[in-house]
Image (cartoon, rainbow, N blue to C red; front, side, top):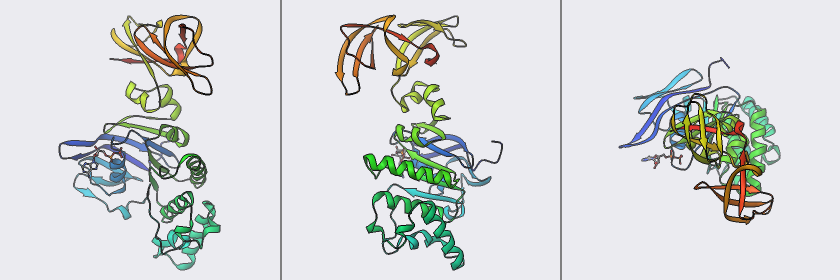
Length: 338
Ligand code: ADP
């Protein structure tokens, strides 16, 4: 991937008064990839997206799109000149235009034949050709979202930005729309940055994950890397539960309530051993833990035990009787120095 990235952020910062909404964010996104910006509500995701789109100035750093500098402090290229498409959660379609009119809306500069051809191609690509003459109020939420995305792609942006695009849809519909829409976007070969606060959504759609908390980008990588090898306990938590056990490092070995294991490169002193719940196993040899509470949850039992003062929750096929022995897979353990 040595080609020019579609998007490059370098130390991008945005302040509101004394508060720093985005703090020195850096990342690169390459052509044809779907990246997901994941973080809790209020961590700065939308602000970052708006800076990329040119709806918001930067107070520090630089935004480059397809090699061109589009934002630095004091300079900002207009949104329509950046080659980005933007779709929000509540993206309103033009109510008085049918689907064809909505998709073709921004193409008035093209000759009519070319415009029609491009709209037809998008109608096909996004499987909405049968809705071409329908008006927005006649469409389901999922169909409206398809039209909004097709409309954003009509001007052939280098980069498509989607801000919580599926959060207006619920449950099963959300999953179906998401899977099929992302499949269509992938087939179209677009470069996409999706903002979401939903870890399952991010893991489900991203080629590249960007983990964000409190205005900062904590980690970027594939979903598997970010899940298995989080750089910090804060990054780990964004993708689901992680059990953190206090440990003591001495000469390259960490000792915790679960015993000793190698900790190469970690400085002597306090550290944490991090385990996803599935890296723990119950029964056989291992450290003794006593039952705190357990609950039947359909596909097994959710059991919380006390492991040397740390409450540990795991999913087990059977209930526990008072005490359980816990072992773990050292290869799946994460180590965080203090
Ligand atoms: P997210 O998209 O992750 O929910 P936002 O980017 O919307 O987060 O907000 C990040 C932080 O910046 C929040 O604390 C929010 O209150 C603040 N913020 C966002 N926009 C403005 C604004 N226009 N004026 C002042 N504060 C803002």
